[in-house]
Image 1 (tube, rainbow, N blue to C red):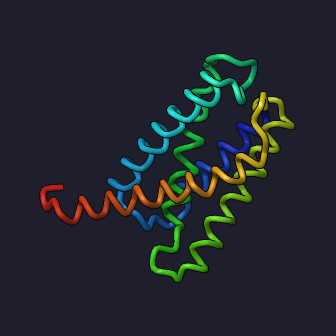
Image 2 (image 1 turned 90 degrees about the vertical axis):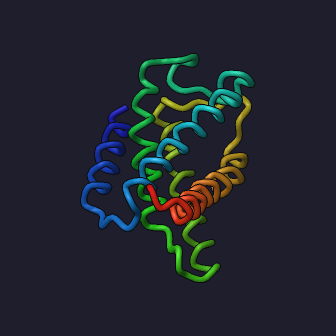
Length: 152
């Protein structure tokens, strides 16, 4: 549990000192998208199909701490994404965040606040890049809508 809180504080600290490259609107809307996506995925995979669970299973007040964690990670992913770079750089960036996410997932399992119950690390290796691509696609949609609506 100490690892989780240290990670949370560290990520939030990095968010405050990192140079902001995305707008507040993009941060706000993409963070809500990331939290909504997390709730939907967990609703199906954790609570309906019981592939994994947090802490002792079921809905716990501890899971409220995941919202700042997902918000911080979402901010860092979209803020540091190389939007103007070539495809190879973008793929490397996505794979780097995937590797980091896998490391955190393994540490969470070893720390005892994330448990597999039918889920396998291979599934996460496949899903993390897709989730990151969804976050970046969401930013592109936000920018497209923002460009078309001059009242925002």
